Amino acid sequence: MEASTLAVTILWSLLFVYAMLGSLDFGAGFWGMIYGKNDHTSASQIANRFLSPTWEVTNVFFVILVVSVVTFFPFATTMLGSLLLLPIGLGLILLAIRTTFMVFEHHAKRFRELLRMTSGITGLIIPALLVSILPITLGGFIEFEDGLPRLYYRELLVHPTLYMHIAFGLSTELFISAVFLMDYAKEAEDHSAYHTFRKHAIWLGPVSIAIAVLTIGTFPAEATWIVDNIQRNWFWFGLSLFFFLIGYGFLFLKRSDGERGMARLAVLAIVLQYGIAIYAYGSAHLPYLVYPHLKIEDGFTDPGMFYQMLVVYGIGFGILIPAFILFWRLFLKDRRYLKQE
Image (cartoon, rainbow, N blue to C red; front, side, top):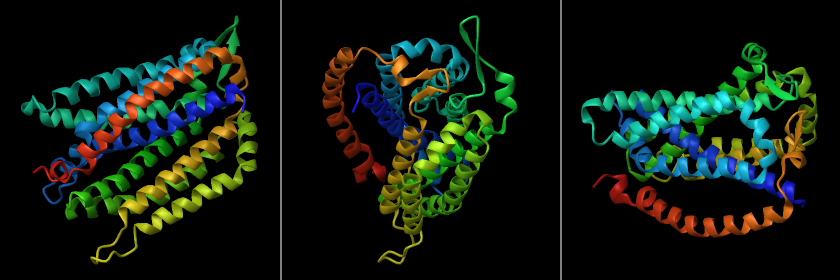
């Protein structure tokens, strides 16, 4: 495997991890807002209990992803920075606001409802801004003027592919978070929240798949190259759909205790589904970072420097992985925390 291909594979791996963690983080904030004043279910308490320790981890992976883009593809950052300044800049501002509110949430009970609203609303807007990057890379919205790239915002804002990408991102976020929080509620033995999140997972699953298929149909005319690549990768996208059907089926299976839904198996199958889909889409996107102006080879760093950085990344993850395992045991497996005993 060429060094540039290995680098972009690592980036897609980090993107996959951040997509999963971000879906759980932002989705939990949204569900916590929606059910904040609902006395008939404890879904808000479960969502906020999960969200309380995990938003820091999500931010860590966001930083790692951005740093990896800059270090692996330094010659692409000038073009990417100028094109993506608005969505990324707005996203960072909202992320800073959300993070600040999360820090003070436990110390400002008087404003807790405002904090919950801020977390829920930014939990929708931030993913929408980040997902809006994808259609920009497909072609048709960028031209060079006097040697500098220019993004045509008007053409982008009136094109249906932008809004279908956003709809897909939001439906995916809410579906993944609903399935995971369903499992989280089961671990906490909270039946009210469990049935609430299962209900949402059941209708969000087919919606997210339908929107994904419709999104491809709204690609701009200049994106025929990636449509052809997606068709060539039909096996992997079909395999992704297969794991979705398995995971979705687990939502209906009856357990030995009489309840419906095997939450843990559903979570594993859905994560596999999106993992396969992300890698298949990443493969279809090659060799371009931004079509047709920027290929991965054009923005890639020196191969010798890349392999040296891999050693540094290996040492860093060697330190972080045990910390993540400890975090998992403390906040996602410890029943005293799950039940708030």
